[in-house]
Image 1 (cartoon, rainbow, N blue to C red):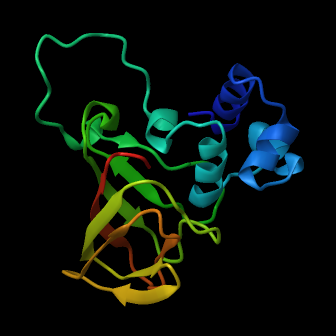
Image 2 (cartoon, rainbow, N blue to C red):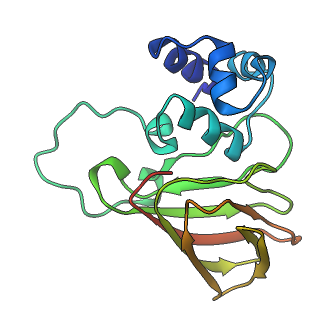
Length: 188
């Protein structure tokens, strides 16, 4: 996906200048320009701030529109049918992968398979959105910050919190971290 082009298109559809969007998102209009030209990649937290200012969810931003009407509901999904909802680009820094099961807009629950390479995080900016979030670490370590409280969780450990509280995820370890998480309602 061309993140810059998609952001520019949404911004223009909503009648916003780069300066207006930057003001709403708490970023500089130069940053918006660089993102739209694909000269820089936003962190998960920065992109979330931008999309909240439009407003559109991360899920809707990254999930391709499906105009077809299935004959029957889809209950089962193969791994290649998950939707990546985190920015992925050529930047050599490690990227967080947030793979969503199904289309969150059709459900009251959003389920994610999260992968954090060593050193990857959701960004310096703390995330905040409506809903509740919970997850269980499958492998590796994840440092979770929620409303100023910080802890490192390992395999089998979990978390649950009100997503309106400022939060962040970071892999402080040398190995890949995998988390299975859920958010309800699907607002991320």
